Length: 172
Image (cartoon, rainbow, N blue to C red):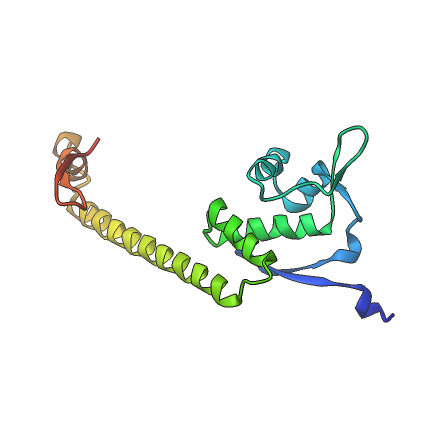
């Protein structure tokens, strides 16, 4: 066996710094929950929470009750964290994980879920841009030397606004 064949590298998206190459050769066969948490950069309670949500599970347990996790659990945890970085909810991640192991699922199924998430993200971006424009208008109307009882920003926050449904609602 050539040295290259013994090293299985995974390219994972890590937001902000590009990609990280993770070598499985450097990983022990089984990890405790603490080792897995440290490897993934999460708290032990996060792993336990994922277990309760049936997103992750230990491979085995020691007689002492310690949970042990294999490389598949590490990959699954990376999958969960990377999917969260892309904005997927835990429910959506569970659906993606089910597609990942389904023999009948196709890439198009995953593509549809990613497309739906993209539409949600684009809607949020649009809402945030509208919020930024509203704040810019308020900031332009403010005259820094005025007393706060004449501050247009504070006055605006006290006004009634129309909700998306067109009905007036009180801002608190």
